[in-house]
Image (cartoon, helix red, strand yellow):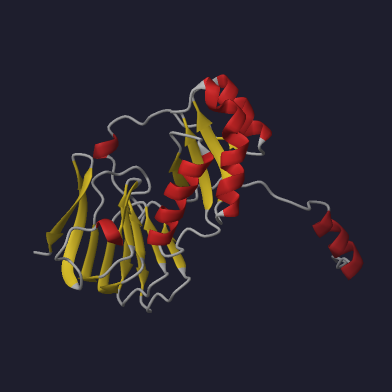
Length: 236
């Protein structure tokens, strides 16, 4: 006969492991910094964030510092502080120069260790079933389809974010932000029955609404990545 453990013993057992470490891949905003002159950086950052309608406020970010020379190292801390003041959450970095790397570490950032490049990436395909959202996506919601396509059967409100390692399909109005190909898939696309997005990106290349080509607002459209640029086209 098994004697059940008293509640106090069960609590002790649960508390023996106060944390768990899990390796999961999450989408991060990448901020490429080519110059740490704070005034110029502030102007560029403020303009970009204003154009994105606050979509990246409190967003975790990876700083790409690979373009910075050693002479920029003393000002890395100022740049990190500026990003935090503007509402981003710098979490990690990449750097090419050793002095810049040490400055970033001293600023409290973690080092990103990039995996080995995968062979035949273009031949790899999304293996998981698509993530299907059957309700409207409201402002402030953030939906991520890891290693899958994302299908939304209703409309997406302004201020909402759709993210997918594969393609994104919206069968209503797309009024928020859509980021496809987060798994470095340059062949991913964004499809919308009514295109009215605040921002789109594919494989890390972003375009805000103020930079969209004219004539696509509130029309059926698809967005693809071609020769390093985002291209807009009508739905078939």
